[in-house]
Length: 286
Image 1 (cartoon, one colour):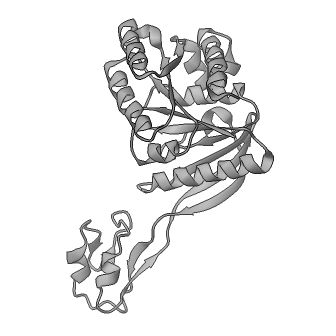
Image 2 (cartoon, helix red, strand yellow; image 1 turned 135 degrees about the vertical axis):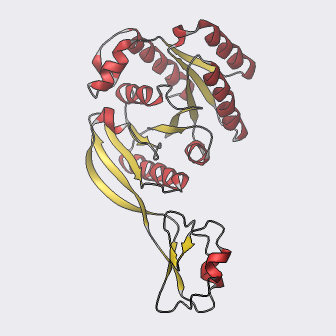
Image 3 (cartoon, rainbow, N blue to C red; image 1 turned 180 degrees about the horizontal axis):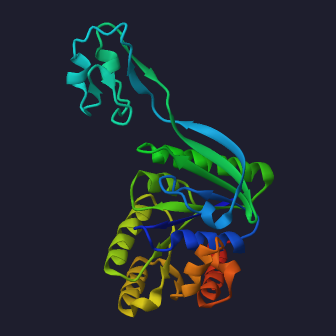
């Protein structure tokens, strides 16, 4: 079983559109949306929910007013300003437990809280594992790990040979959780100054975890100058440039129709994505 994670150093590079297109082209696979903070792969795949499980984050503090002596020790010790008027603001509480251990009358207790939900759905292209994190909730890295674990369980049980993950943007905790133990990271970038800068950062992250990366330049023809700089960067680092997708208005129209561009038409973007998938098959040795 191989794992392909599609990531980007910044948002808005077209990562999810590429992931949706590869979902059509790949065979014998499980799909997983690891961008739990702003999941949108389901918008292209129109999944039908089959399974829903609650995701509990770290426990939050709750003060029992019947036991509380109103000494304000907990409020003075809280570094996050979560305790006011002898009550805990669950949005501000980080679950560190300082107030729980410091309370002289044991009025504080740590209780589990619902931080989000994990879903398994059926799509036209295979099973999809996706998640939704609650408003202002943290621990997105933990939810990413839970989604990937569920995808592996499905792949092992049903004999799928590939997992395709639509990863989160950036270089933070969710991306690290998405990169752990994968076979290949496909980094989707754009030919701009910020795209080049963030590509260097995310490639450094993949290199730090001793992973293997490949690069795809989306809308490469909008700036041939920056595309050449990206090619130079890839050559210097010995990283395969597997795709150069041209600008194609059909991509936006396909999104409006809730379709992967591969299924919308056979324009220049679709043709290059097909060619890129052929190269990825060789890199992954599928």
